View 1: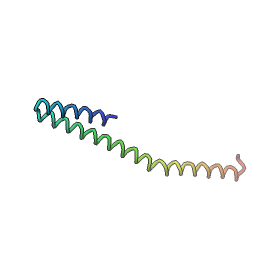
View 2 (view 1 turned 30 degrees about the horizontal axis):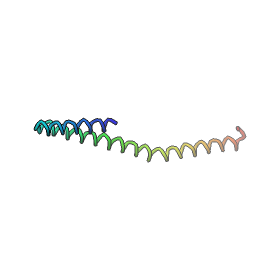
View 3 (view 1 turned 30 degrees about the vertical axis):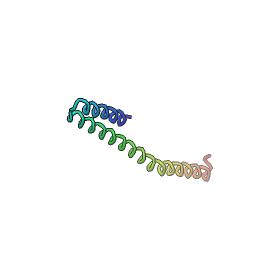
View 4 (view 1 turned 90 degrees about the vertical axis):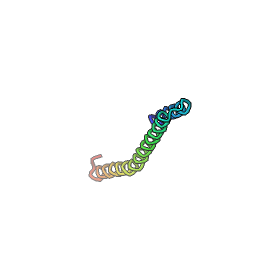
Length: 78
């Protein structure tokens, strides 16, 4: 969400810079938009990493739980 806020804020600054003929404000707006895009890309990467790492971890956890349960049954604990 923060990335979207930066992108919108940047677009407003860029347009205000164009209207006011202020290249500095216009460039500041473009920079804010780029910052917003980078934040979005970072969040997307973070989510993809969680998805990629989460599945094997969850599968390993479930396998360990099944093995523990089987061991208890085999020993007669359960």
